[in-house]
Amino acid sequence: MCLICDRIQLIKKGANPYFVKELATGYVVLGDHQHFSGYTLFLCKQHVTELHLLEPIFRDKFLAEMALVSAAVSRAFSAQKMNLELLGNGDSHIHWHLFPRQAGDLGEYGMNGKGPVWWYPAEKMFAPETQVDAATLCKLKEQLLAELKLVD
Image 1 (cartoon, rainbow, N blue to C red):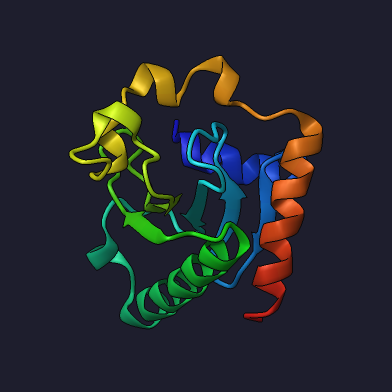
Image 2: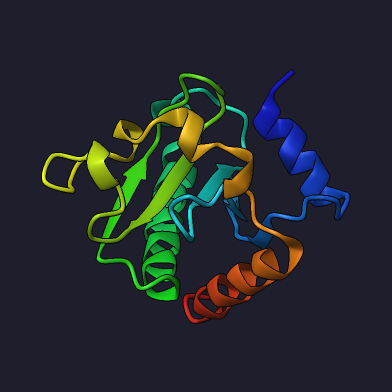
């Protein structure tokens, strides 16, 4: 079974607490863990493993919407830089990772405080304490939704 498809089904049932907004080609959700505050995902509505497998018209819309989501995440969380990744090595269903970055957010793990998010140790990035409480999650969702409404 596909973890991304499972999460989309939870959205459709109204049972995914991380869901922020549905767009034409995908779903905007906050990440389960928030070491990088504002970490967001954009889940493709179609279950495909590679970007080039999408029909060109849908793919172009998906990429355009992803750019809008990136701009909204950047504004909502005052990012100094955005990191965008479409990997799919673990979950083979197209989904973007959007990381709003701040100076020094890697701590001692970056080269002069800089580098990709994956330099930060996974056991710290996904530690239980990086999951947010309900009130914080609500606040993060409100911040992002306010910016996403501007791009409709």
